[in-house]
Length: 358
Image 1 (cartoon, rainbow, N blue to C red):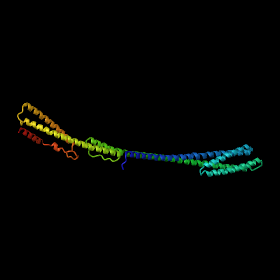
Image 2 (image 1 turned 180 degrees about the vertical axis):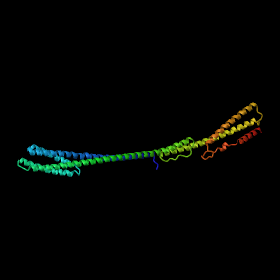
Image 3 (image 1 turned 30 degrees about the horizontal axis):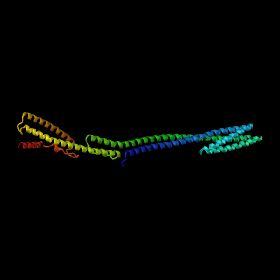
Image 4 (image 1 turned 30 degrees about the vertical axis):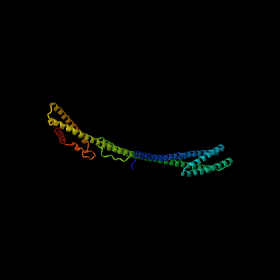
């Protein structure tokens, strides 16, 4: 399966997004749990402690009011007791509503003792209003006993709630430390995964590009063999195919150029050799006696012919150095062109001269 650059980058980005999303989801879950525990402390534990404080104050105020009423027989104190009673019952109802399963039995005992306490106060109030003698000490003893019992229950409620709050805060701190360690581990793992994934994606792109770069350097130095093989990514594979096609075309053009230069060099050297040999024969007197001026001209022609032949041979050697003389790469074999026997050309020139003299 050969993935394109767009597909690889898309998959890589999606994988990175998935890693980041997973880490973020974990952080969100931990923060939600942290928030729910903190809300539980604020919404339940602190409110229960506030209710306990208010209930204790209300109970002590009611005890003081009803005692003042018994001593002074002033209805104002009894009315104050009734108002405090209404507040106490409302506060007790609210505390029972937010209390957890461990606090509810304590609140139930407080409310039962409070009903008994209110019944004693109301009964004593009727006896006070009737202005008849009654066992005041007995009433006081029982009321104090009920008030002390309620205060003990409220104190137990406060202690239990403080212990519960302390346990929740301790668990919250432990959870925060665990979440911090987990977050650091996830962040480190995510960073490592992102780096490795980025390296893999980058490597899958840079490696074929490096092959293309090496191939272009080889082409620049005249090496058109060994086509580069790249199939993935598809875009770079298409570029590699185009580069291979260009290399083959350049190889063919280079071969054609070498053949052309070799042919032209061969065709130039043949007539130059004939001219050289002809002038040599004329200098040797084969065509008849030559004057001093003619000999000087023939010598110039011979020197220039030698110079041109040397240049053509050098040019042919240069062409041969670029062409595979064995013909293994499809290039033409020019060994026969370079090794032409000059004696054949000389005999050909002599044959023409003999024909002219005859």
